[in-house]
Length: 219
Image (tube, rainbow, N blue to C red):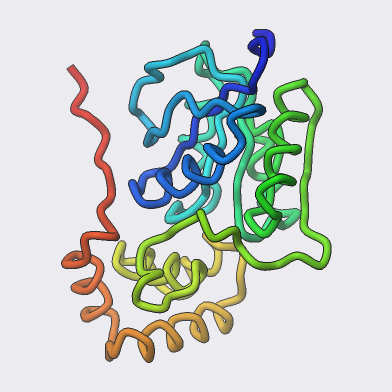
């Protein structure tokens, strides 16, 4: 598959509507270079292909979601898959490459650097785009619980707690230590005035921002 003429055609991919919308909003600031063709969840069909780059946001996924990445990498209308993550570690890169990911782009990059990386990915270059001194996530990117003061990492930990994972399982999923997960969870509980995992799960269920799109039933 060749790169589309003119702008790079991108699909933003994740399970959470608020996450996908944030990625799409960020990329929409660069209409001379990027066309956001689809903002989808895994298992939804590509409606406006072909796609030069599927930008896969790892938020809320256990590990690097091997099944999801393989699905995207094998899709006939997707040329390249780029992983979009807050922390890009060697372990994440190794796991994601085995699942078919082409490139890696940090969320801690400014918007124009993210776009530069997408252009390079679409041109067939294998990219690992990491931040230098810049560490703030672009304002357009969003995540569940941000309005309640949660950082993106705290939000991910709360989501995985609500999914029933232990601290050790969350640590493995996010490539962190169990002690670091415990610290994030403690900070999230304090910010949300929660006492335990049961209350955290109830918070996720009742908060609309944490709405997770379910894949359509198979015919």
